[in-house]
Picture 1: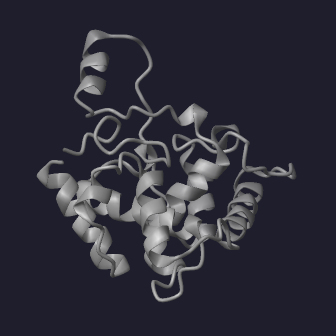
Picture 2: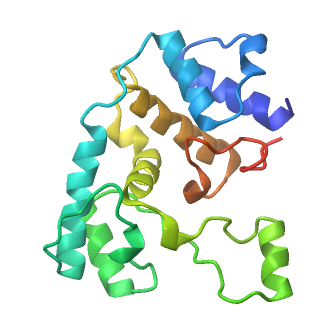
Length: 194
């Protein structure tokens, strides 16, 4: 465990007011692992509350208004089907209607030039592909970026809310792009946290 990992664990412990023993901390590899450990300490077993559904309704409403579609929006849909950060007018309408912080994703450069591959190798370019991000992943990123507004720390009621807060603290503490996070992302291998 490197110093960055220790600082991240301390920030998570402080937020949730728990103490994670070193032996348990050494077995935490992914954001999901961290959320499960926190949930055990808080004795929370409920997987979902209305947060994800609430955000789905908001996102669906924003999409319908900004791109003028009446299509049913599902968690498994690709967000790129409806929204492109490059389409500034519709992106702007969408974000204004949500009244939440919506991080603008980086779009990986097209092509296979050596300089593009080098940037990705040193993580100065995103390792995610906007075209593959689902509405469910998009909502989780939005929830993480707005966790302090959306989740009452004294009234956490689900493992989903815990995961969202863990992702939020990870982004705040390490500066990783929020779209790089995900339940199965490894702190060290995927996010580069030592």
